[in-house]
View 1 (cartoon, helix red, strand yellow):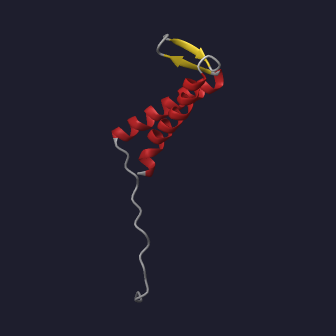
View 2: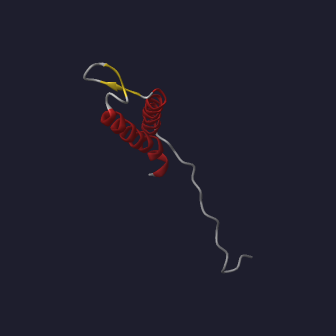
View 3: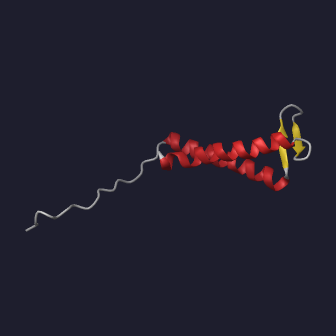
Length: 83
């Protein structure tokens, strides 16, 4: 017989990811791969000239691209697991 102090273990449910979650994770991974490509090659895609520009030619755009892409990519990829 169980005493009054018996507590049931925590009920753990498996995490159910929806199709939208898988899409968000995929888009986040693609953005992070683009950021990694920019870091490895030290180039960034410039829409104004529709070509790749070097870090030295466009330092501010390069920096914004790396920081913004990293934040957005991480948010999209990790969001379904955190929220």
